[in-house]
Length: 214
Image (cartoon, rainbow, N blue to C red; front, side, top):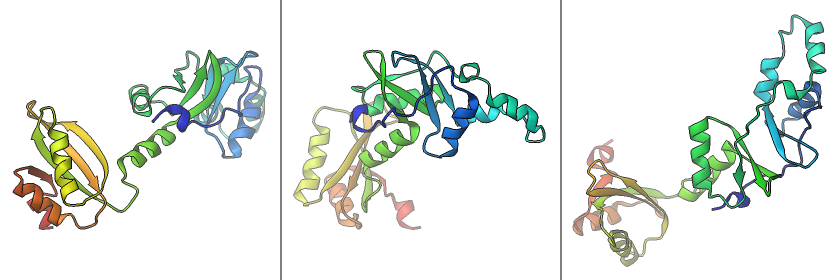
């Protein structure tokens, strides 16, 4: 899935000359938590978050100081050297940026201009959707040999049992000669499928005997 399929509009922006007070007004509406700062050519030159604004405000015990901060330009608190992404980037790849840089939002740019935003919540929701975890289903994990065609072999077993596969994930196993296949299948009772897979010689990691006895 591409970022263009999940990104939000970029109609909420500020210029560096706008004030912290104006940013607070936007954040208080509760619709956004990040505001890109752009120049006259719609190029991203910075970004601020609701946390940046909170950190800039003094204690409520000093109302006069708070009033003064309201007049300060957002340029004073914005983050520069902004990490961005493209509309054509894959969601899975962009997710690594959120993890690596501990950020909550990425501006989406095209030809150097801001065209949208994607947040960590957008990415997380998309990944959950891709795994199929949001719908009634069961999960089966298999330890298989790391060789060409192994996924096709296992899928064939599911097809013969007329079991619909919602999603498939592949993880590395501790043993480099093997890998883990995680199937989410469209049934709430996977016991017959588990029995069939064991009969075919596959090693079941989940559900295992310990989990079945709980």
